Length: 496
Image (cartoon, rainbow, N blue to C red; front, top):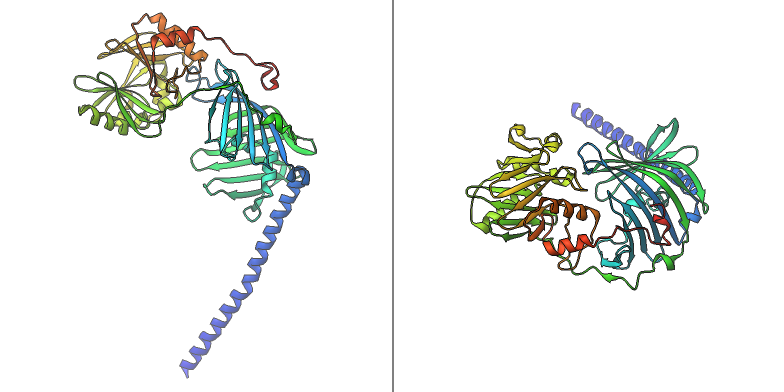
């Protein structure tokens, strides 16, 4: 009798468990449906606010964004960041799936004015100030102007219409005292986007882009207005992990712009010339006992001494580059010194690798504290030699001179008297195989500083690239340099 009771009781419990599960399923479905409907209602409100069908059905659009901002770690000195101005006008032809980008940049002491035209599988970059062009087919429809698109709340509103089923409503929060709906989604690459949409008017006030490597990228949109029946923020501030990087100077939107003008190239421009492929790991002996190795711009130069090597250049791939040159030289000697030519981000990246290999860092005295802040290995303070201001310092057969350039107020120029060779970094690098490169003010000031040293120089090597210059051609190019100005008819750079 007990067995029967147990069976009946078990069956009863099973029935109730099944009944409970069945009753919960519609509730979950109803919750999901409710969430989806709330999400869709928010999206609908955003689209209506930003122009509705006028925005969604636009055949083309031009987004204008002029901004400026600090570039930490890239200034003339370690403590003051460089300020760049970037004016850009991006034309998107949605029907033809093509883009045109007019870009004016003011970095440090020079200017750049370029027009990029992407159509189909081809992208051509026109250097307007030098009347040259090059193919840049990496800049596809998705990639060209992508950073400008991410900083446009209007284009984000248009994009939301294509994210049906991918967006999640995750509640409300306040921004500047106003309640905001939060919508989020994750891309295939692992980036999470969170939109803050004003509950009252449907405007996008913030966008948090959480990047797996770069961290938290925050776009703040304000001062909205309507032009061509489409809303847009006249002000945008961009922060990277809480630090300001860009702030808007001028922003505008234009629907159905002149596509003929936007996609018109320049018939009289000539190509820059054939370029060097640096995509594969390469190692070379560039002079007697002087070796260069690396991939891309992560190149390092090693100078062989009687019982050790001296390194200069990129440290992020130092171990691999060092291993390659020892194979070529067949001399298994330690790396005793690594010269940090200056303080910029790419030059301080990976310095732990040099210390791990047992090297002592050689730095300009004014850069010591900044460089120490980028080191995490123990007892690094005992592995640094500081070169006094404007001093000459000898390391075996290598001479170092602390000079002032437009790039860095204190820069360690490396000179090999026996080879009559100058080794520099970031001052005249080019990927052109043989043609005259673009000459700019940094190169001119470097040439002046070099002339002041009165050294016997025949060859110049920029560690970042494989191209070598003769002293004669470098002197001629920099002597003929004429500062560039904004050409007539270009509003984008009319104000300098």
